[in-house]
Length: 106
Ligand code: FES
Image (cartoon, rainbow, N blue to C red):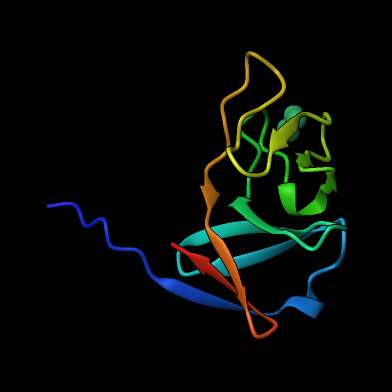
């Protein structure tokens, strides 16, 4: 039987996330790339680009898009959809910020 339960995992203070850049986290078996936009939004996505394995935490945010550091494919930070028709979408994770602390739902 497959469980659909999610768990909320603390990632640390919001101020530890660099503005406009990615930050890598490992939560159990799940590697994540987490971004804080200049507008104050926080996004969490799978850590590896589905194109050719680029480390997305080394990428950056442009508007609401995550830019892969390898070939600059752009992914919608909310939906994970790619701007390239041949590329797969990223898995995205819900994030919340409570009292200055960042949490991700896995
Ligand atoms: S590996 Fe990410 S765009 Fe190519």
